[in-house]
Image 1 (cartoon, rainbow, N blue to C red):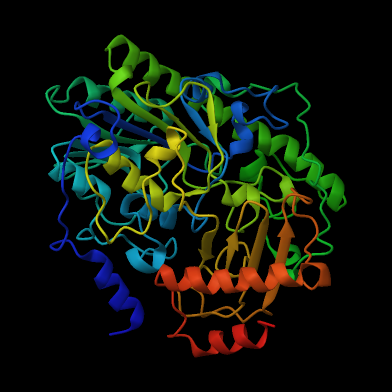
Image 2 (cartoon, one colour):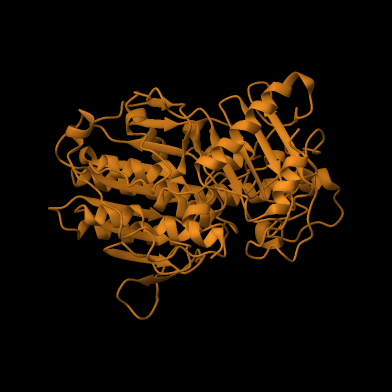
Length: 510
């Protein structure tokens, strides 16, 4: 058995899980003995920079008033990060509370084993009704949910095909996918058993590429000159070759389906980038307008049903997304726009209205937090920890000061090399180890040169200049390398099965 297989089997541990349910008040000294409903809404590729309560250059031209309602009624997290910035691995991490090396979902090609333990199964055993509606994207059928109705694979925007639990045939639902997923979610809440608390995962397809909005938003922002990020024309100096060689650049690495019109052939790189940005960003924001509208529908429904006070409401995305920053679209890199997840949460019984949290939270923390709100202890197999106390403004004294990241899909999409790194509130260290390590689809690609990047986020918030190799940062680099190895060990992410990587890493360590 390979080490990877061993860790996967270790992570499953279904039979060994013992989850102790108890009231929220007895565990935390706060709240009520009535366990709250948990409504988890997640969009696909929704960058924090495209949510108006986060500020940013798009806030005034493309506001998101309904999503902002959650932040106004609760807390906005400013340092919420994903552990692997790609859809399927992030979704598996959110469900299992585990990194990729523990839950077995490293890449888009990996399935979440139906037997693997995850938060919905735990809540189900603890007396919750559980459902997932919308995008699943984990290859196999969902397990651990009393009800599911999901898009196959990526799904389609218009008249989506969906697969429902207990039915042999998929069904076409007329309309835009965002509206359809909202309708089904509201119907499920209406028809639930009102004597039991519920856990609902409402997963929108939007605003994932190729950004196809509902017809009613098709001409939104049509005559608006969209503000550009200040590094749209990034030339990738003073950073790794990986940044320059990546194939996710606005314009030159796009297709006609991205901009919905023929791509001019007579524009230079800068002109093409500016032209393509104006077209794709409008469609991206048009998709978000539909999401925002439907979030408002759901929030209004909770109010009408007198459920708002008893429901933990969360809005997030599966990871970040580049909106022209560094001249990129897509995600994958450990750069801020890709790494940072929006996270807004409202629970009137505990969370102060309009509050802001800056503690470092990772997506592996979501599942333990859900269980905490349900009055249940997270199993030891989960690698994250509950941040319920943080949401009350009570940061534990031993809360993390660094987070660990690893992207495994070496060159498989958009020519982004595999890499891992650590981030503190001030610094970020990234190691592009540049070797195909047998992950799905990677062996066909040639190795790339190992490289390091180090950023001082306080002085260089847009990550334009790596200070790796600068003598003034030698101590920072040394300390972060030690922290990188410590976290790799803590999370069971060993390179022992890849001796060539260990040799490359150690050679370039000093």
